[in-house]
Length: 69
Image (cartoon, rainbow, N blue to C red; front, side, top):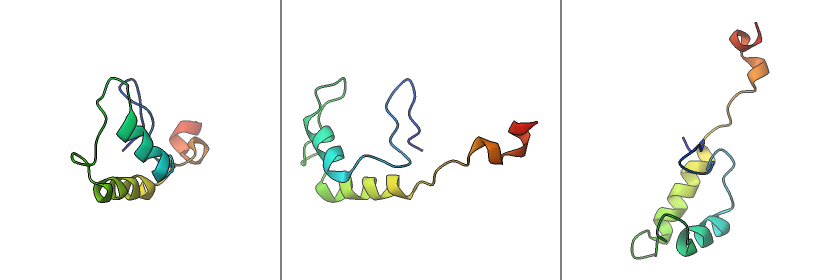
């Protein structure tokens, strides 16, 4: 669900703005190749961003009884 970890950055909840995500994906020079529009359309990118926005935040650990024993 986009939580990030050793293999990649945290993507959700609260993803970076769509414009920043687009610039990052289209121009990255990291270990993954850039995703040009021929590979990932602007509409698909917008859909992915909308999905990331829809992921709810995790509950505060203080609200989970088992973690507060």
